[in-house]
Length: 228
Image 1 (cartoon, rainbow, N blue to C red):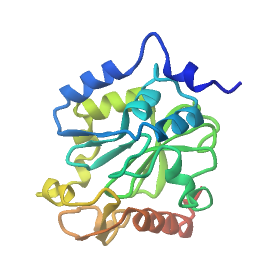
Image 2 (image 1 turned 45 degrees about the horizontal axis):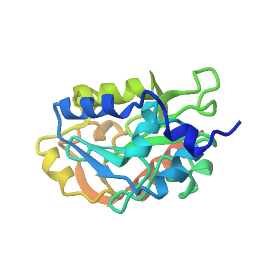
Image 3 (image 1 turned 90 degrees about the vertical axis):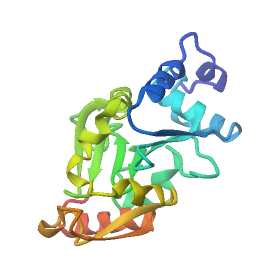
């Protein structure tokens, strides 16, 4: 049964205070984008996550969260600076037929064109429906993180982002990434899934629209037989 906005937004134990503590204690810079107060209602009801959950808290209180100079973009209910949302990112680009399985909820992306999505039974029916998967640009596959959304947030906001991306960063990456618009990513040549593209300090890098970057990854994934 679908829960109403009132049921979802009025809870005794909201998740946001704990999320704020994580954000304020993050060793990397974090920027919280202000939510569009009108649009967040639609997104919250659509995802059916109360503000007592981490996902509902991010949707209700943020237009998105930028972690580590914007390398990681955690999606919320959208805003002027970051119009894509946890609802729209897959659907608006037709990714359900390109690389994101129907029913998967994309909850974050990164500057290399990687995507984080909640399984919801479609990426891997044998894995928990609320577990997070990562579409990795260096393997062109959906990889299980063996963690739910709350654990994913806690890991990334507690310094884990540096470990997660340790092998794909280069000297001066923070300066390059901080100059990107939020609808851009970093395209590399050779690409990261090739033998000679693994070391991003030795490849050619340029900013491109993030949509173009992700669609290119999915196109190659299908050609190599890695598509969904």
